[in-house]
Image (tube, rainbow, N blue to C red; front, side, top):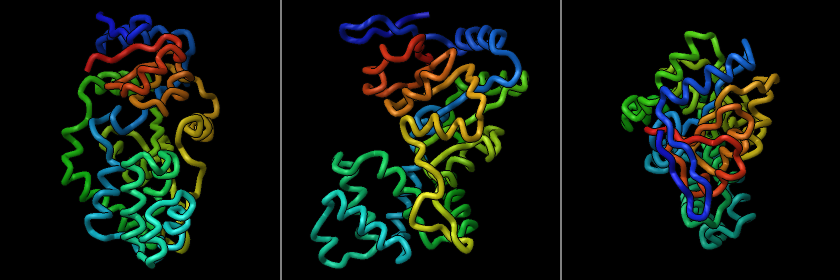
Length: 272
């Protein structure tokens, strides 16, 4: 075991998969049957962000439809994004592109941007979106981006009958299909979920946002016991999720998550 050290802070243990499994085994003995593992998805279960991949593909194909235009315009107006596009009568594609540029420039809040990236598919049929997701995952080589260091932990959970939940701020459609190859069922996924009307995506969320503290509320809705053996995340907005766990694990953590390490008791870093 080695340790990472933040400037001016205490060392954070950096542990192998085997070390972390031993911690999880001890927590399992203490919490008993029914306790679960909770994972963020993007940057944690796999490298990269499939939500961004999906939204980039939407923009590349000019796939935003008129059904999304009014809601996109309201978002742009609310945050002062690209008034030339708003006032100039830009359509759904132009508005979605402007919001994306504002997000990249840190002028459009993450929580709103991640929600928008889910409902921006307004007007799409659910089966049509599923096929698009499959194409994007294949083109981006999703299977090869899954982190090998986490596979023994997932195997351990299956062998022990410990439930595995995934809580993500990316669109539900892409997360469900991304985790399916890991044997995780849709009912154990919480993600940004757009409303559906008449079999088509609507331009609003159909469930509360899964961002920051919202990840905990989302996990409680599908796992009311909230007995979490271990939680895994990479971003600052995973900090709340990590605090629920007996064994909180940072996976390829962002600087912002590392800056919060002192507020997450027992945090360890997975050696990937």
